[in-house]
Image 1 (spheres, rainbow, N blue to C red):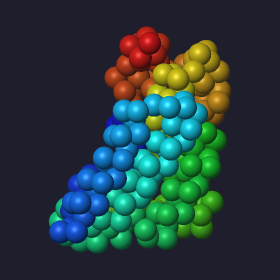
Image 2 (image 1 turned 60 degrees about the vertical axis):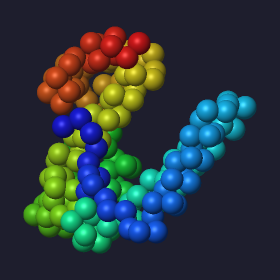
Image 3 (image 1 turned 120 degrees about the vertical axis):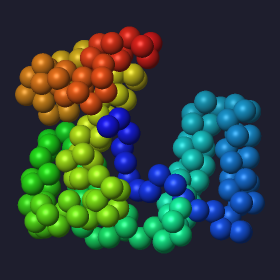
Length: 176
């Protein structure tokens, strides 16, 4: 799994949504096409994209059901804790214990919200951060491994290769 699953992959636009999303996408496109000040542009693009993504999360799933799965309490708490602790906690049962839920309850909430287990979501988050660090930093692979909580660089390399089908070095080389 290479992407961080966080909800339904398809959302349903309602009758009034098309014009609103067209405007939001046009704003985003216009700002991207007309750079002025690199730092201000980066901040503005980040905010416009965040607003667009928040609007998307409020849409119902493609099957017409409201997107309430991602808002369930155990899953919401898990998402928050995952963002805080992905570099130090790697086991789903540790997250369940930290949140005061059974592993079964946590997995059920994750399955309901995303279709994936807590462990799959943890691995996806670590993989995503690994890719970011490899692509956007010059840190040695061993340092990235350490920052992501792996005890040995070889463990990180095995994890990354299993998750992406490429070694960290090959992944970094293809992004340069």
